[in-house]
Image 1 (cartoon, rainbow, N blue to C red):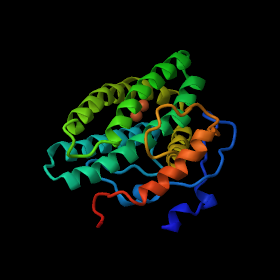
Image 2 (tube, rainbow, N blue to C red):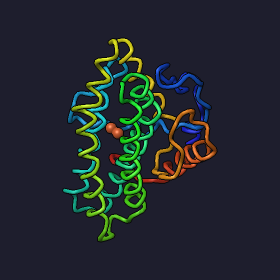
Image 3 (spheres, protein in one colour):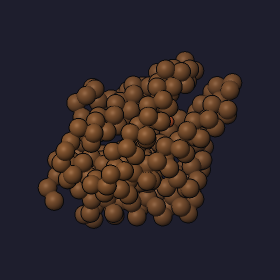
Length: 231
Ligand SMILES: [Fe+2]
Ligand SMILES: [Fe+2]
């Protein structure tokens, strides 16, 4: 268990220079669930992928986890995928806010407006995720809450994939885009793995909330049930 709490310096966030100029603080990471899952629904991008396929893959994984929950009739399995889904979505949203949206602001003529609109959409998704992550899988609100969340997420994700990220990609060289993927994946290791809708999300990420919630989430993750794991 202590392995999760030990920070390897090589895992420290490496934020894209277009996204952040200031180095990130080091605190406990949430590496393990990231290592133990990846679905086969899409070819898994690696650190050499451009940012658009990386984000698309994240979106597909989230849809896949939600489908597991919708189709399962086993409350234990639903709980395991609820934890996995929450872990993936919380980190995805904050990763975009810290790495992708600052780059959009820096690169696109309407970048600030675009990032503000996306942050607002994220806020709505986070508030629904906060409700969903705390529901028992036997609660009658469990599936309807996830459906509402996925409706919002689907619209938001489609717009990112079809409009905003292609526009950003046009402004980036292959190297810059790959570097952004690396920054995103490294950043996700160090951000909170549960939804905290009122936590500040704009870089530099050095708020007390961020410093406190990420390690607390990581410790709590040790006691949650995960797909493919006993106990
Ligand atoms: Fe997003
Ligand atoms: Fe996204």
